[in-house]
Length: 493
Image 1: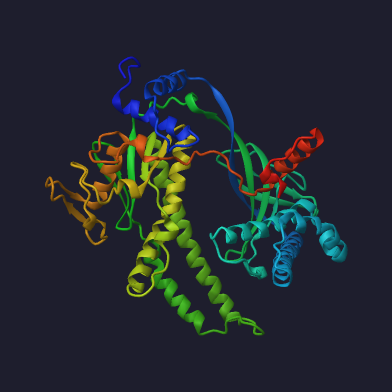
Image 2 (image 1 turned 90 degrees about the vertical axis):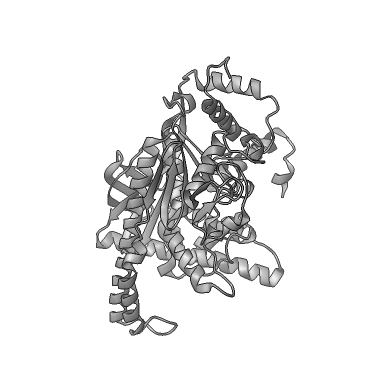
């Protein structure tokens, strides 16, 4: 684009930004000339825009004995309500073949509190959030995303949520402070430091049985600059690929960088295995039988070992992703289905697949992608996800674009192209293909960004059934009824 004075790479990246802002990224751009002119005038004008972004900040709570008893009592009551809602849905379906909705169970809460007076002390919206949690579980079950919801024991129930600002009050500027729970009448001391702090909107009280610790998790609305306020030139691009031999392989167009796999799980596996072996010799809890004190003691030791591995992995992931996000403005990777990659194998190769699943979960593919995405976008950058099935980065030659199906075998770690003779390691060839696709330099059919339908994590809002969206839909329905407007078809049912 000589009339804009943009380099070819900058030209392509501006096109990517537009594609990620479109409602339907799979439609081809027919008039690229006018599109780029419009986008360039938007991106290069340095217009300051402030938007609200929701962040989650977690603090550890330090209750005294009286306060902890109140927290335990509230947690137990919320667990009872959860199980009661599950039992209600199961009974109605078995007896009447009818599905109970969230609004039906929510409207039954006043009668429920009259029959069980101990629930009257709890905040009404926190009870509604617990009922909504059951609805979330069933919605995921209906969509095929999880198994059928079951009753939860108290040791498996994490906590409860206040979906709005009523019922609690926090006194903090982002570093330490106190949080007051009005329904329980307690003020809890909390410690922690938030990276971003703003207006708290919701609060979730969480208990971790393995650590015997209480936490307060806030969702906070933070003001951040949007779009062209950023001083980034979008010229530092990196393509990265996640693996088990090498945790992260990066390519910035000139050099390769590799982050080794720390293997935290494998290094602590022997200690955890010995502890689990000792625990199997003690009296475990089962129906009608309580666990012995020695079993509880060894169980706490095993939990501490596993928690240490999780903390080590989390610390490593944050350090690595922060360094990558500090260096680069644009990240390019492939969309991974981690749930499908770590599913159990059937038939032959069960042990081999179990080892591969453990290696993938030890690195934490999903967490690394999530951390890299939000950290790059938080500073005004862009993360581009390429469709794996269309590009086939691990099977495509970076030089000539030929696709070799035999390269799909994970045991093939070094690739030699039979068409052009180009030789490269598997992970390096993968990131080179993704970088070439992002910069429009990759030869081969179907490797153009305009026709790929690539996307980023910044997508339009959709209805997910949250408490906030449910309230908005209620208010919109009431407004339409007050104005005499006919509601849409999806709101009638």
